[in-house]
Length: 339
Image (cartoon, rainbow, N blue to C red; front, side, top):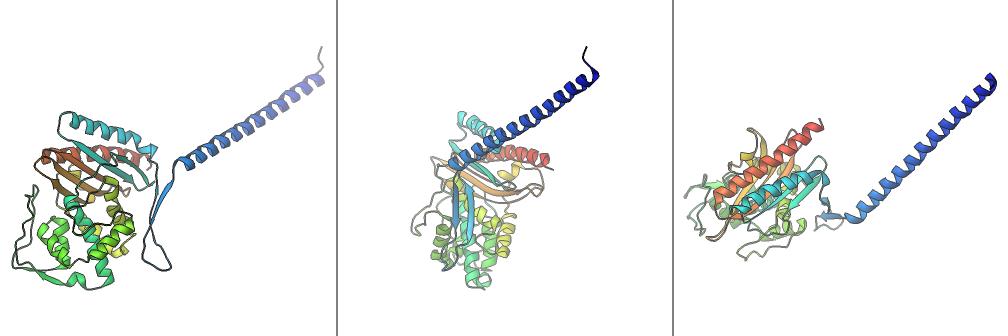
């Protein structure tokens, strides 16, 4: 028979052995997890570089504009696949030739892009870099916004506007500040032309250089962007990385009053705050419609830029609205999940 003393000794051995095994297993598991994590981080650092853009033109400093990972976000891949399905659906029935989408959510600074290399004629989207240029000129030479310009002659832009709005009146005098309002709120081409008459081309070209884009030839008939390139202008305003904080806020406020409601806005719930701009372009063979906006979702904003080519501008507007709705639904779910 085993004595009580020996039995207690055996139980103690078993207990101590169990502790040793448990601690050893935990330690080895921790080492394995740490190894896996380090391997993942090492792999990510190798696979994903950073794109850093700094402002030029200073002697001692280079202000930081953007720090972007080259890699798209895994978190946004489900959203990306949904958007691709929507685009493919409309492409299969001939209602869109091609569409590009750029999405950046600002809480985690994650992004994704569809058809990133396709180039588009921005149309009235170019009014945003014009806005930034005029505001930068006013920072360099205060008082420009109060300068008055008289609108003397109706201008012919050689194409009809599919989404007309308010326009300045011949014979009236406007301040530069008022012209900026007409240009952004109502996408008025006449107001834009008057602003371009006082715009310093060198300031515009420096804006493109600072953002890291090809410097535009001021005599060229058009300048084409891909969807990610154009988004830098909206990002510069949101980040207040190019203009002063006050001017960036003013620019975003103007964009929040844009009266175009047929695209991104149509895909959002009523009263959603959005700072946005749309643009029409194209010819008799192919129409283009684009929109870029910062959507303020429960203090969790995201940037959405959509560029499209097709044959019917109304259909393109519907596609932009559907893409916008799909993005908003996913962004709202993510926002609710983190609350």
